[in-house]
Length: 405
Image (tube, rainbow, N blue to C red):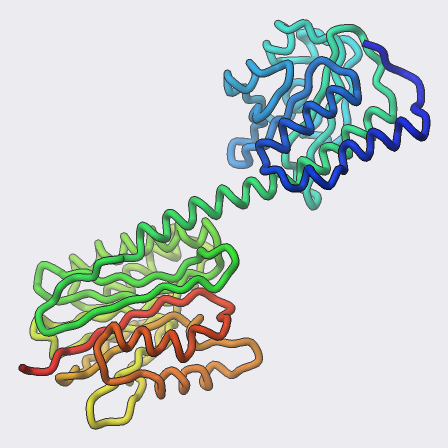
């Protein structure tokens, strides 16, 4: 392969335009990887081009896309940061040129088997963080120039944007699937009680840590949960899933909501460090006349009863889960649920708005809850408060004690 020498202005401009072409922005990540590798092989007149992306937990580079080195991808080649040619680029964060490939400076057997003689590689960086490594090679000796390095760095910048978008897309899809699997679509059929729930995403990602859950316990009591894990995206959804499962397990060993949340708090402090969660846990008796309530940093539910003004349930608000230190006692409050009475539980995305006091939103909600069927309650509340572009996700759960026939 030919190389060396400085490029003329016209040829340099052609290279830059080929890499920054606006049509590339319309390609998804996989197609963009392939297109850029094809272009860089043509522009640099090289035989091979490859992209290795960083597996952060493993501290390894993983072969993700390649031209002329496809076997590298098929074999799932990995190399530790700091080891070999690509690992050295990842460790130093600087371009590396190898004019003569030998087993001493290259650990990838595919490079040796395909007869690559010279290599140029650059780090793929995004906002100062390593994303991966891009390298090209020739099967004849080659002296790569400063112009070659600059062009490859330009391609790496374009790849950084695409790989970040790809990672965000994967996280989004995984979080969305997880969240949809954990928010119940069919609620239990409980004699004397109507149940309805809603989940409304408030972010472009459509995923977060808000959830609700309803389950019948062996004792015949009904468990009802509404919770909100701080943050958004895959991590919050994963923490939410673990807390949901743990709460169900603790609910099987204790009929005291405060004790259940105490156990859940211990789990959150120890295993979910750095995550703050607010939770409301209620238990409704088999005759649906009595409700036990414990609140962990969460908004209190609204109670609407025929012939009475709507009000918030009078219950102490204990600390959220996961903040420690332990030792602060949690409280369980017992209230009556009269015939026709409605309990509305929710996450703060329903009532919080930028530039508005939290209590104003709570007052709006309290006034909006009708004494009606659970489905009507959810529809009415969402129409009144959930339609004005909430900045946070909304989980809403309504329970109504049926009137006697």
